[in-house]
Length: 114
Image 1 (cartoon, one colour):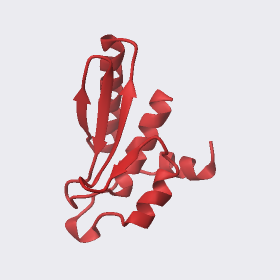
Image 2 (cartoon, rainbow, N blue to C red):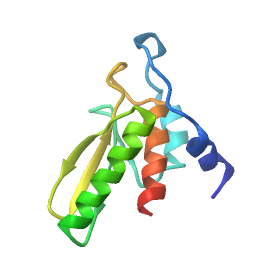
Image 3 (spheres, one colour):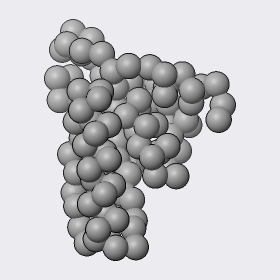
C-alpha cells in the first residue's frame, strides 16, 4: 500500500461546517487517484461505487461491515442494496458536496472489499 493511501486510512473524519465547503475538482481528482474504483458524479456531487457479490447473504454481510465503518467514522453513506450488489454513495450533506471524509470512508471500504 502506498503512503498516500495509508494517510487516508489513518485519517479520521472530522466535523464539517457549511463554511468549510466541499472539495474542488482538482482536489477530488487527486483523491480519486487513491480510490480509483470510485466515481465522482459532478451533476449530483457524489462519490459512488457499486460492489458485486455472489449471493444476497454476502451482500448483506458487506452492508453490515459498511455500517460498522460508518459508525466508527460517524460518516454515513447512502446504500442501495440489491440482490447481489450494493451501491455505496457518499456526499457530505452539510456542504452539499464531496469532502475528504467521503474519501476516508471510501478507502476503508476498499480495504474491506478488495
